Length: 300
Image (cartoon, rainbow, N blue to C red):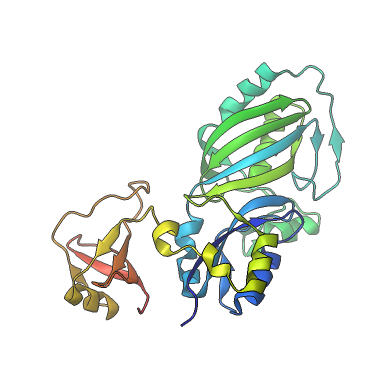
């Protein structure tokens, strides 16, 4: 039977997320490997890697809030909003102090409309923005609503270090750029580390994982769906109910569904288990609210 589960890996500086996927594919001797949320080469930290049929669960991990430690350099702007490109504008920051930075950070709390950077994979009219940016084009981008909790860790101007808890799809580079704009001096992201993805933290260093691949004991780091999807409530089924789900039939559940930890305006999802405790499906209430229907089925 193929391996199933998740690895929480500490991505090193300089490697792409795809580079890490390649290391894992070779290490576990399996092609079916993917990640649940990419990290740029200049970022380090938590990269959740899905193995086997767990790749079908990546969206449920990817949609969780992320926590980052971000280093922002004020007074300098770059086209990519980070160190991937050269500084194109320098402004004096001698007049800035910690109090002004704290005041500016008030604009980065709660619900915020964020404009994605031109150098991003966001699509507009069928084209990725970075493809347009490479041709020297800049287009108007509609803002996207994100949720932020931002805390000042260190203020040693021109550098500012922040801890940011944010909803999925947030661009930390844009926060760096926008903070510089609010302060009137410009800014860019000079360093980034992802501390957690949802409930998943404490990543395994990639070098240690490579050694474990060679030794054949890497499964000690494998996480199952109970931990990776702990935000989804568990549904333990009797034999008849499990058979219904495995065969794609509706499951009659008259009781009111319990709420998970996701926002109330999102569909309630459950991890479903058979009588032997084996994970068999992700299920959700049908439109009538009187039955559950399988969203994704996993044969035990």
